[in-house]
Length: 115
Image (tube, rainbow, N blue to C red; front, side, top):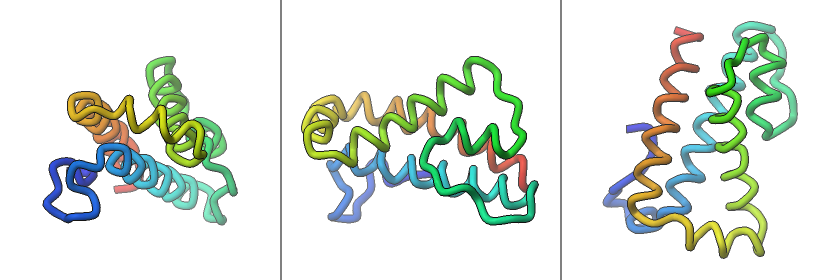
């Protein structure tokens, strides 16, 4: 699996919002790897996944744009104190599992561009 869902590691076990945050970081890293492999230069300094994809020359359909925008939102929600509280409440076990599965699909799609 891409992330630590159902992880036995004490830091992440039962910590749903952190598991989603790890997924966001993984997707950002693989997306920046696509950028570097295509452009042969350092990736842009942004956390906006849709913009990184566009800078990379990836043509996104509406479903992919929506997925990257939503994943970028997780990054913001998990980062700032006021948003973090509401994000933690939103991250039930079921919600986390569903979002991680979506993120894994995005990760595999991006990984296929560099292998």
